[in-house]
Image: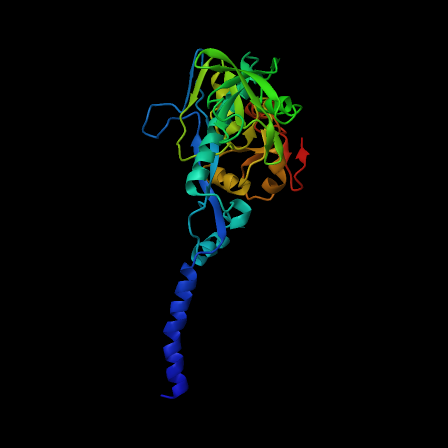
Length: 356
């Protein structure tokens, strides 16, 4: 055996070891893959009789069809992705790979993202209830509620989490956007009068404005809060977070409160954020959500209008992609489809333009 041959034989296990190390070395990427879908009109678990959606204070109707929210499995911020996993995601046509920095910031952790997702889920449910009830002409009150008081800000020690802001400088406010607009005209250091509701009492409070992160702020962060005439609860797996189920939540509530059927007993899926006014917004991971719905045999998939360009290029088989901008659009499309399976519906075409 020559020295060259011997050196070659000795190099093989070293090369194999280096390849194994390379395959296991964490890389700065994130993978997206199709997640589970959940029938919001169904039960908490397959073997359970507890419904996901419960409504008290109004007559409800049961639909035998399915309205499925869709999810995406995303690599958590503190997880390591190696070359082997990236190759698997690259080969899978329903998965995607993104640079870590495009998805997460250096400050993101599993805990912060879980908390953010839980808050977004709770907010999306409130917005979905508001959107559905507005579509059904219910009357209800809206007010901003404080969910965070910035430490060492003028608001610290004055406000408490859970305070409902009623007025600012004697002017009624009904949304977080109106709170920001009401605070902006005041000079830095000038006292601002607030009236809030706390534990059944109304309190008059005062705080000044200062520049926080370059913006005029008092140091309170609020979100919309509603006083609904009926009680609506959605018992969704706490591992599912984010705002993208808002449209499906609102349709499930609308369905439960109206006679007839939006699904006609069939399997409908979709995605999209929703505002309290019923406007549908775009989401991330549209390809993976379409894949998840396709795998679970959905017949229609409701697509936010701003996601149509990407959705049109996603493999969807016989599942129709329906373009929606509002809850009203979604209701109208489903009613047309239940009346006639071949009905012309707003759709995502190859160019992402709606066709009728």
